[in-house]
Length: 95
Image (cartoon, rainbow, N blue to C red):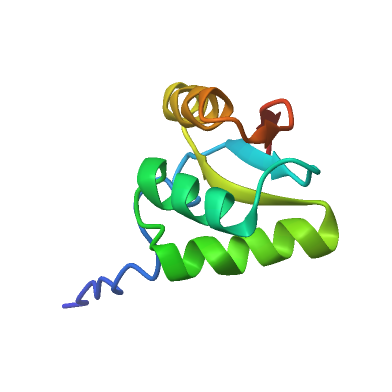
């Protein structure tokens, strides 16, 4: 008799399991590292302030960063929250 072994999940929900929409924050001249980091930590599940700073650094150095990916409805929700908070957003992108 064969046995099925379920491997542990290595990432959170909506991180590749049907998640086809990307929320991307772009670099700008008016948001500070503190502002970007705290906004990401406040609105995106699983992003701590420390991780927010690492993402803010990536945005600064590369011009943008994917901050969340998943199902379209949630992507639209997070995108709107981040835009309303003053971050510069790229259009939603389908993966």
